[in-house]
Length: 166
Image (cartoon, rainbow, N blue to C red; front, side):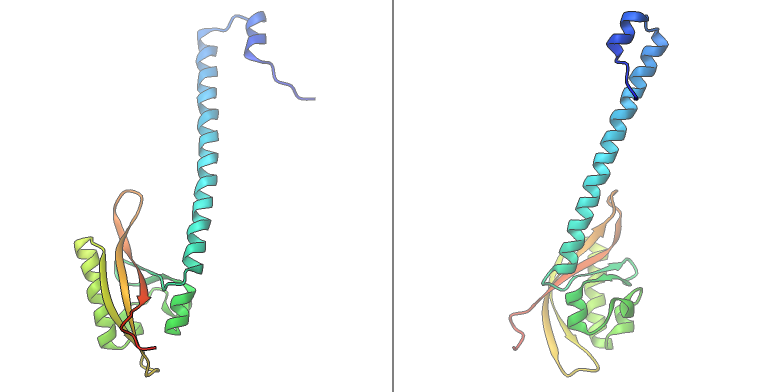
């Protein structure tokens, strides 16, 4: 059966040298850091799951674009509204997905967010070539940053505009 000899027991039968004391101190610090890291990784995993659930289950349209304006992620509400699947839009720009006039408005506001590093609230129109429906949205567009405050893209959460009919 495995067992552990406590430091008090060892001190009763052996005088701890300065080197051994430093080694014990180092091991204690390493164990503390390991415990902290495991705990941090568990908390990070929980946070990721919560954010993923929020993204996937939000009643709002949500998308994420990189700095070149290419779609990286779209949520199910976005795909249901646009009729485009995540595979259809991944790494594509608005110009590749929407009529010229519609794409131009999306890209204009995204460029403003990237250029000025500011959050914008704007009304946008979504009109698709294969549909006669015109949809109006109030979009909250914002910069996305990595852990060191470097902008890595833009995100948005459009809401149905009160000016939309129906």
